[in-house]
Image (cartoon, rainbow, N blue to C red; front, top):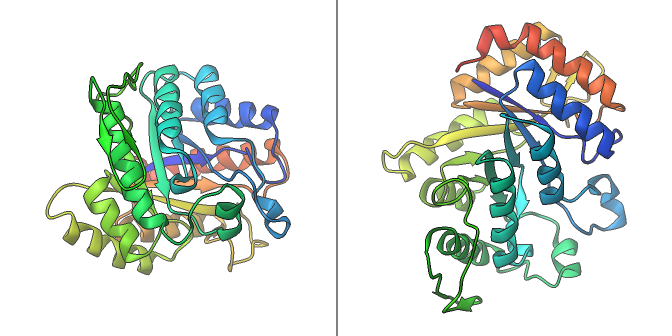
Length: 289
């Protein structure tokens, strides 16, 4: 099992200083990865999802860390312009020397799509085309593309990402469409906030639809050590012994990379305390190279 941390680019601890503190503490403690979420303009009823922009955050974190993997969990790709998103991802991959994983999904906030002038109803089809656009830009020396929404020819796209062919794509979401997309267009599946039994059911579909090709599973879990956490919103909770048991259940379901999300924790110092407890008491039980 590998372990990652959700950066405090949103939540009560949100600040550039908190992002820096958590990023550097996670790398020092031996975490495998750091992750940032994505929302741009949300309705007031979802103000908890206001955050520091994703690519800017990861570009900053690339400059203040050295080896830890960076990822998006997840970028709402169809509400972004895909050529620009490809350019931004390539830049982060360059600045991080090839440390980016691009987690992408279709999202769920219809209001946000409307605010950004994007098409919520056709977001699945757009997602597929946007992925193809990015792959062309990252891989081809003279990129050309003709799709339903995007067309270009006789173009130059430089610099390419540091990783040959571009950063690996993981696909968020729990629908059959999302899992099939993870099997056919990504290197893995990126579910959020579901029970081990639901993960296992999704992994069975992922493996069947991948037709024998290897696929990784990265699981994003809201986390809070202690007994006070609400079980309806915090699947990874309780004592260290209970957390170890839960991680074991997720590992049996097929999770290979566990992402701890402390976004209900009020301060960067409190996040760091929980991170360090997990590193000392969970890593020796489950961590793999």
